[in-house]
Length: 172
View 1 (cartoon, helix red, strand yellow):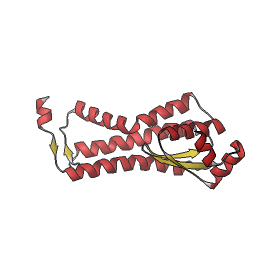
View 2 (view 1 turned 30 degrees about the vertical axis):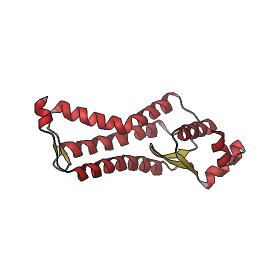
View 3 (view 1 turned 45 degrees about the vertical axis):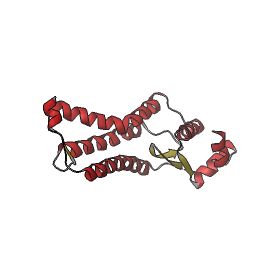
View 4 (view 1 turned 45 degrees about the horizontal axis):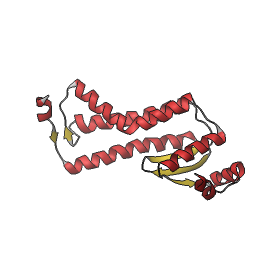
């Protein structure tokens, strides 16, 4: 183990900071790409400490749920491998199989644990319609996210709950 620790090289501290920002930006970008490709009725979106979330009316298909968990994990794993185990990365780690798997797995778990848990919840306990919307709003309010409703979302809330977005958010 001392040989592995001695062979770790930090090539550039600003490069490491830029790499971490790019890594997180690409993972969130993959979420946004999937939300754009979904083409469902958008109620609103939320920006918070855990990233950007889109609120849709309908429960997604099982394929979309699986894709929502796996694509960001794949992007994250690829970025961690490029950043730590190639000549392009700001940190040079030795190419030991256990180290490659361990570091990549930790990077994927940092960015994708929430996605995997959400996918399991959606897969095992699916919710539709109003219950789905209320669950997502409650989770987003608990995470201190700022929720922005679309015109369709405002009319949906008024029609289904007889409440404006402000009234509904105050209730949570």
